[in-house]
Image (cartoon, rainbow, N blue to C red; front, side):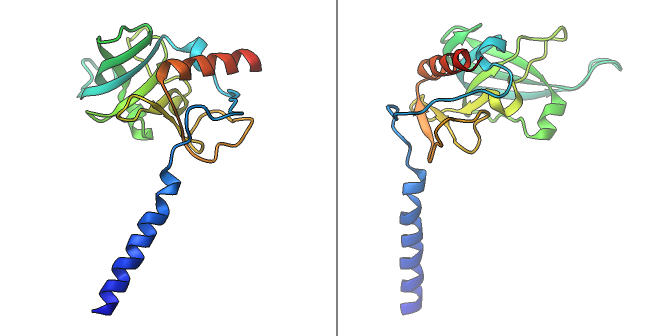
Length: 179
């Protein structure tokens, strides 16, 4: 069975070799400066919060002229604008967004920059995916260099994590600088 042992060893080396790729850059990373290219997340958003998805429900159209919507319930872990920490927030999104990948799962933690509700009471993340960031179990916002919706002056070689309040301050500062 030396072949099985070799396969196990190779698998172990591959798994160990991938660990540095999942490392996260510490909060005090020097030289990280962002420059937004999409709608201002901080100026456009009606709601800014870090929260946990509690429930997701599809609501069928009520009348012939209405549209199907998704009702998403969040527990607000940290309210920054338009919400309060500890609040239960219920939003409604047009169900069509979910065909393009804008989905939530119960238990998922996210930081969201949401447009103010429309006349129909619907909202969505500012700039699409640009207004939605994953949050780790410790409450830190994960800024992925490949997924982030704005360019950086210095290339981010790996994910950066920071608290929601610090992330919001960083974005505000960057948006002011680049306007």
